[in-house]
Length: 188
Image 1 (cartoon, helix red, strand yellow):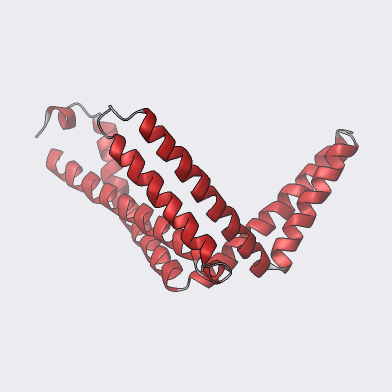
Image 2 (cartoon, rainbow, N blue to C red):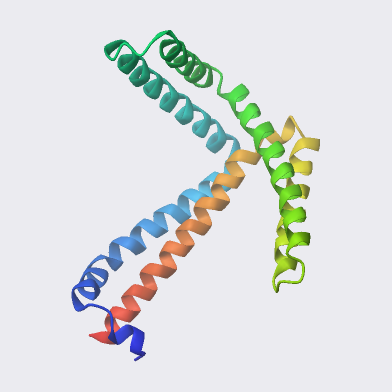
């Protein structure tokens, strides 16, 4: 057993051991949701657009209540109303909202990729600069691919990427849960 494991507080280890099963169960659910999103990217993307729309509506109503109660002024009221309208538009037109999110994502990927490439060349003598360059080039390629295939890419991009993110987040959580269970058993 390593020195690091021996130095871990026993109360913490008891909690880890107790909760590793829950961690593993949640991880499996997240992995399955990722697989579902990748298998049905349009449904996942539209669901995300609707969810964001409802969040904007709720947030806008909250802003409006605050603006009115706190006498925050006309600009606060206008901002709140715009937020509610934007959310309502997303809920009532999830396809258009999904298309907009796809275009924003494509633009973000290209711009962030260009910046990553420039940063990579700035740090070029440092070990690992090639990975920054690689990441930037991949971002530019993904953004360009999404842009060039629009509007078709709007049907799959957001849902697929959310699915990939959920899958890898769930996988990471699963590995953490299994490792925690293994460490707890090793110490016990």
